[in-house]
Length: 213
Image (cartoon, rainbow, N blue to C red; front, side, top):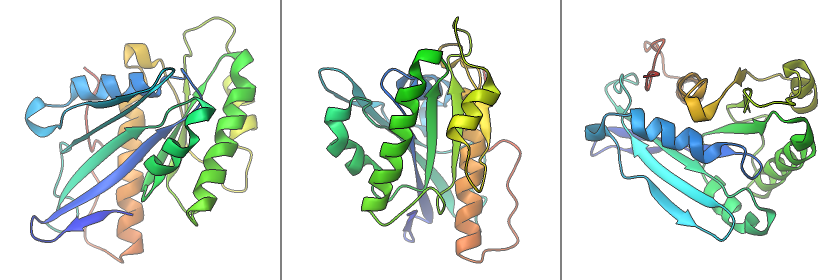
């Protein structure tokens, strides 16, 4: 749920990067943080565990006053991939506005991808939410590695539902697909907010947030 600060004329949108351990969630946020103007971004905050990390930072996009004079701020989070940290995942998902599911493209990671997606849906149900009501997309990461599954195969496994969602191929270590993912998700959450609140007269630019360097 977007947080509206009327005193500061600011709307904060929360985007969570979800997926199995070591799929590239952290790398996505690190690439984005490096690309954002330091004057418009917060610190990259990290909560470390023995096996995984939860990251967070917020920033103002390139085009911030899209919604009727309000400044739009984006808060980006990752969740820990290890199952033992599921309580942390639940906390991070609270009041989420959009989800980027980062899938590992390697053949031997397909079961982990499916388990993580099922876990996401389960945790959303616990807060009376669902992927059917949230903007979300699929990022197929690690496309540069050997033994990756064909895109159509991953799409069949993870996107086989009544309403299909956008998919983006990525190599997060090189920044490939990272900014395309963020820009699309940012537009999706803003459009969803505008529709929910019956806002008209605003249009979304082709590029909301950051560009690939």
